[in-house]
Image (cartoon, rainbow, N blue to C red; front, top):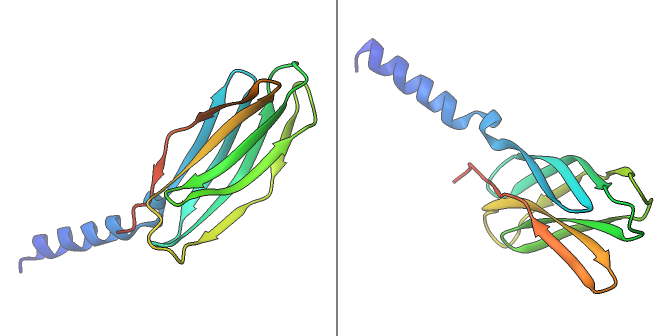
Length: 130
């Protein structure tokens, strides 16, 4: 193997195994509610959601709800009942799957209105670990 090929192979292995590729921003919003967070995939089965915030962006007397979902379903639910214009910081979520590989994570937000929950899901962050 030439020195150039060896160097390129080493660089490729470094990039593929880099944990920076395993991190990403999460968000979901709709009229009246916004949630943001950060996900760090630490392996095939594990992730951590941190810096999770939930904002009530309207003054309609409705509570707002945020969820963390993965490919197995709902992982965690949190509410913000603090009212008009409030933002709450939510506890970190750590997950280890015993069911198989975690393929993706996303946030879902809802406005809890009299007619039922009005919900929207944000984009998925995919787990880079095979």
